Image (tube, rainbow, N blue to C red; front, side, top):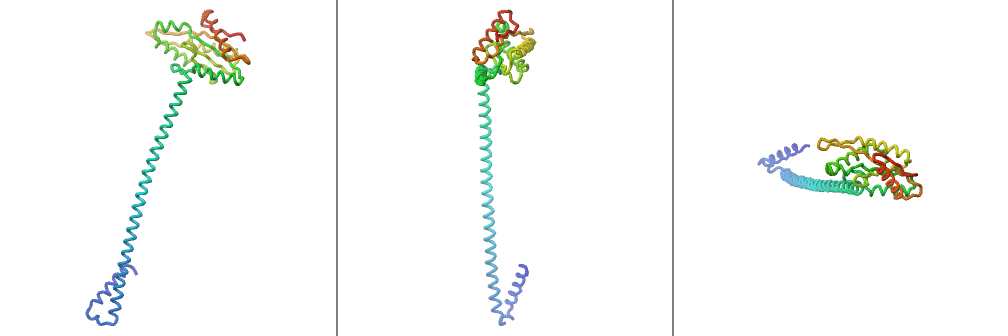
Length: 260
């Protein structure tokens, strides 16, 4: 029986009990008590349903509050994660910039003395062969004096870019002084190193920049020395420097090798 049928039956019973003609019927009192008990049980059931509905509503609201708190906490965590990731990325970039600044020349972005010296010590400790070359821009001072240091810096940057293009990936090129460069050619014998330096000198001589509508170009002088077994790298460097001085004394724009 459906709820509607139950309600219709109760209304029918209450209508019969309300008729005066049935007041003295033997079942009148029993039906009236049964109807009253039904109404009481129905009222209790409605209260239970109401309590259950309220409880479910409260439980739903509690879940919604918990869900909102969880979502807020998750958003805060995600925000903190983004901040942390950004901070770590910034620290990595800063560390890379500091490392770059400590090992490379700020103007040409070539290796500086510190990095060259570090690589030389590593090769010396490992007993690996290498050849050094010192290169100097001929008459660079006159360019600075006539055109200014800004033009001289432009020329240095252009020469450094050409060096990076010509050299092998395994070669290390650094700025050794104002207009002086150094090449560290690992696993390279003297004859091969001389070929590399001559090719580099040829390419650098073709580099030009313009200053006040005047095209400027330069030449290089170079000194090369091959590391001797058991020799300290400073001694190898001194022999390359001596060869460079000889090249400049002999007229510049040339490459000389130190005695083996």
